[in-house]
Length: 274
Image (cartoon, rainbow, N blue to C red; front, side, top):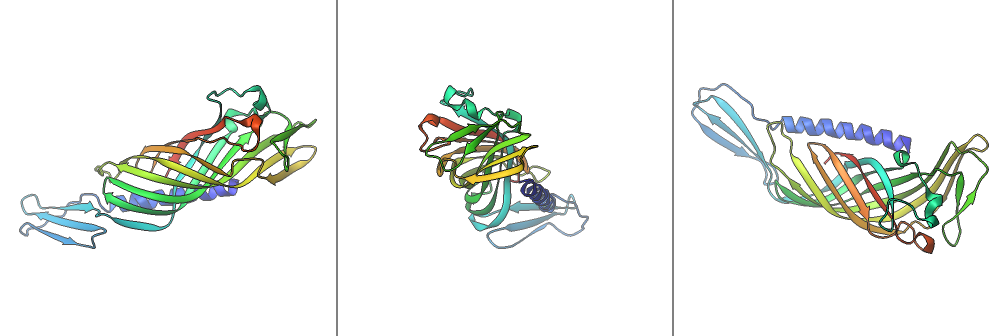
């Protein structure tokens, strides 16, 4: 997971540098000239650029606009890193049935990013896109327990081991549908973004990872009754290439485990790469 985070941060930084370079290329510039005023337009409908020369001010103004159109391809965008919170039937306090899932709030995290995107831009200020990516939720358990695999319901065992790390995780293929409302570019070539929409997740894997002096590092994989198809909604707001995100899933975190009925997942934090 650390390798994934490192790779993601490097890609996010590279994407930000490329986006800034692209934005800088569309800023207003000045150029001394003695010719009469005229305008030159060129480019495909997808991306039209206009250069206007004003003979009185001797400046060249670069105007960048985008026409409606489809776009698709590989990407690295919407890198989320934040905190995950369990909501037990509307409460942030776990019920007695779920006390074994007590967790360390500041070490329970959500990480995700998109790698594919297909969308349609209606105007420079609004577009819709369907994307695909990956999403991890890591619950850092407080108690010295082991969540057991291959059980009829979510089951745990109390251990006589002091775990240095006891992490209970799920990984999903995420498929969000985004409605992206954007402001006009400012003098720095950046925009304000407000993005919201539904999000569907397909379970890839569940995992228990433990580190202790007695057993060293151990990993156990199973579905652990994590819901195989989750659905919810998300929102993102930001400026330039960074912002905040929040995600809430409407169905339960676990299925076929009646004691965990009503236990849901909410996460929030920072995101990079609109």
